Length: 338
Ligand SMILES: NC(=O)c1ccc[n+]([C@@H]2O[C@H](COP(=O)([O-])OP(=O)(O)OC[C@H]3O[C@@H](n4cnc5c(N)ncnc54)[C@H](O)[C@@H]3O)[C@@H](O)[C@H]2O)c1
Image (cartoon, rainbow, N blue to C red; front, side, top):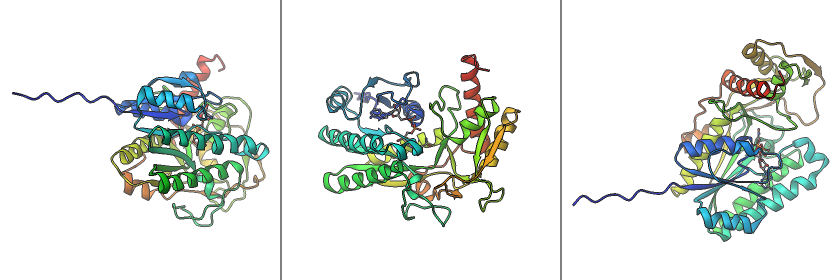
């Protein structure tokens, strides 16, 4: 007699902050891999229409009853914590908002996950925890030196994960993103922050005639004098979350990984790329350096390659700017703005 194998049900993953930029792209990648992204988001900065790949629960990560209900209904095998506030400047003028959400509410979320028996957690950390670094590229052993309340909250939560790991058997991936950028190559999703503070969308807005781009600092010790950053395509970041979940769910050790490409691009490189891709001129206002901005921040991403086999596929500056441009163009044409 031929024994029929039982169909296995798809794995559900709790995606806290899945209506946001990186969370929505990650939900798409999880769904393409056959998983069910179950989104929990209070829409404080997210967009309901970016939740397209699984069930949606509107509410806060601090709502323990809601998190427990989601876990009862979906039995998620892992959770990703994207939810948080992410404006560095605002964190300096209103730190309590950041410590409340990124620390207090996030720890409450973690406690509820543990109470529900959910022990595989992927966390959105940030290269901002490194602050100013003399030595480039930056590896995971570089000293941390957070320069804003935002960066402090990210580093603090990394430490919470570590202590919860040793005390409660929590297994985690702490993913330190460098600059998330670009848009879904299929054009379905994109970066939709309001207000926007990231360089690539701001450069695109300037090309679209929405005011000049402010460039802070032209006298850095870099080839063209403008600051250098490491831009990773959001779909590549999303792929690293999928790989991290697979790794943790297969019983792998907890991870702390830089997610960047290892290649830096200057502000001027970004302006030039937007002009090439759009065929438009980017009006610019050149001004002095901003306090606390490092001349260059570039990741050493070798550990992510070694431990997860993570290799960015979409992170050339041309692809990042091209996908971002296509998405913004469509959005603004649909909105009747250009
Ligand atoms: N964008 C970047 O370049 C970058 C770089 C490093 C780290 N990060 C981190 O990655 C994460 C995602 O960034 P993003 O750019 O997608 O931000 P985003 O603002 O687009 O997404 C965050 C999402 O979390 C939701 N949220 C916030 N607080 C919540 C709460 N208490 N309960 C439920 N939902 C809540 C928001 O509504 C939003 O949908 C953030 O934690 C951010 O700090 C981002």
